[in-house]
Image (cartoon, rainbow, N blue to C red; front, side, top):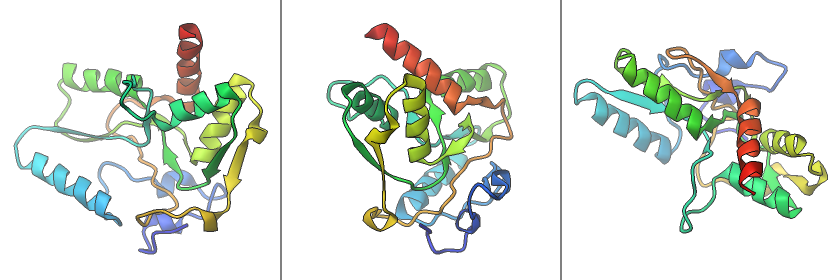
Amino acid sequence: MCCGSGCRGCMYKGPEESLPHFAYSEYDVPAPVSRYGHTCLEGERNVQKNGQHYIIRVSRVWGLPVLDTDAPDVVQWLYEKGMAGEPVEICRGTIRGFSYAPDIARSSKVLIEEEKEPGIYHMTNDGAATLYDGACALYDIMGWDKNLITLRDAQMCTHRAPRPQSAVLKVTKCAPLRHYIDALKAYTEQRVKKS
């Protein structure tokens, strides 16, 4: 799967290559490949026009409290399916980071309290994976049967917008967040306590 623009993310061949080389830092010049990306960039530029600012970029946010009217985030959805023993189908998809909402909140608070230099900050948990890999990690943590997770054929996975193979955000301007698997463990511990 490739956005077709020849971006760094499209050039990523997989785990055999060094992922950090293909990750995007806060200093890289954005080159969005979709309407969504262009809209995000336009929003960032509008914020930058208004003086001092913090722009926090995240990826695949999960761990937010969900109201009755909200759809669950992807990790919550996987957790609920796993608890019910229901099968799930997942496309391998883009390699990205995971951003655990409580970790983002703590890191954002530090940014403000320590009066860090205004600008763009990436806040994602350490480690990057496809959604399939993340689902397998969650099922391993919970001791669930990973055979309930089906990896869909790339031809069956259609996306409305072009996507690069890698959309990893490199965190360089603030303290790195814990590994996403450690965040998954903390999330599952909280869920089990609430049950």
